[in-house]
Length: 207
Length: 207
Image 1 (cartoon, each protein chain N blue to C red):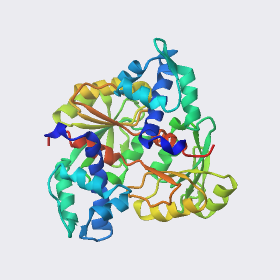
Image 2: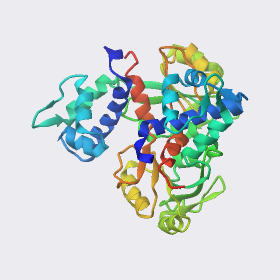
Image 3: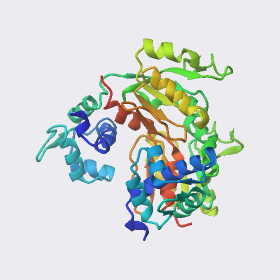
Image 4: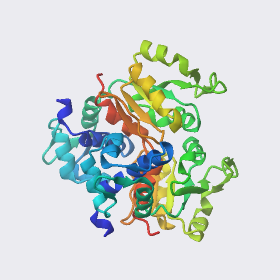
């Protein structure tokens, strides 16, 4: 089943989940509709209904969606019912910000180990985690069966560290390095480069 | 012309630009092809040619693209020939990392002012910029005709700060707050939420 659903649809599910969580916990609503959700997100209600229909029937004509139920279903679809342990590679500025970031909690991920190859950083405490040497990456990742990594290193070392991550069994990489990474089939990389987003918006600015 | 080209196409141009810059400066190549670029990016060469054809003829059958020329053209299309001054709102962990981030240089943006409303942060120096009070946001933004902002504040204050940014003439916002922001037509927001990317990849993991 998995690979029959376009990745672009999968990509919208976390956005629905975030909005539903906000409507439910933040605004204390118990039900919503594809119309309301669409207005909130700037996505058409037809698109939302079509995306969700890949996974089942979640709402009723007239009464809409039960928010808690849909949140639970989306968490299950996205495999977020468990908390994924995450390794963070790179203890520079971005690594520090990520290690202290409150946004992971209750969203399926927890940074459990931080690695760096700079002797000055190894042994540092960041948000009660001790920075480990990259040389212990293999042992820890394999022993703990970690599948998810965040890469916050310069472009120059990103590919060789990616190769190491793939070798020790990492299957999902979120990369902050501003280069394209080569990974074998079965491993996914997504990129977080703020400049790419800003450049996309600059197109619409009057120079 | 501008609004005839789908935003999804615009969204790929910065990715092409980044790859071409890497091929040119990093790998010291002078020419490339849609095939090579596509292999590098995991995008089909037909897609690349189609995207670029919206803006003109950039390559020659057989000889491919002159990298420097195509980089210059993409920079012009995306309005990156000038450097956009950017205000950063929020001097917390993410704000600190952004203020120190080296990735903006030569890519069209420069953070020039940092704002926060925490009296303990106002006056702090981050990477040779002094954190200003949010109360001076209007004066500075209007006087300097700033159009681009990065919002690195908690969800709870993100919408009210967005309203202020819109009021003083900001047209592009990159938001790190994990909520959806309402903006009037003509203002663009893009979101940088690492968890959304990680959740999208978790779908493909075996729980």
